[in-house]
Length: 127
Image (cartoon, rainbow, N blue to C red):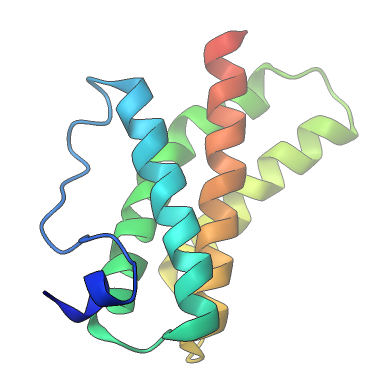
């Protein structure tokens, strides 16, 4: 049994995110699972190899979700909501590019950014 299974964390080392476009439901579950795991790891073991791999997956989620989240922002009428949606995308991309040296803070920022982009992507799909 690996250390990540002993801690109750999912095996994320070999999971791929390339099937996200083909299956939105499984993509949503994958994203939600990664966000949940990141927030848990941030509190308990933010610097291990699992956390490093998870930060990379979250960066991939941000790059994948930024396009539809930006499309959602573009569709909104000029308003505070549009400004927030657009700035959320910009902030998430900055976080993905580099979010400091504290691994716990990085996990939290990446996870929250992914969650916000996923929400906006879901709003685009339901529009």
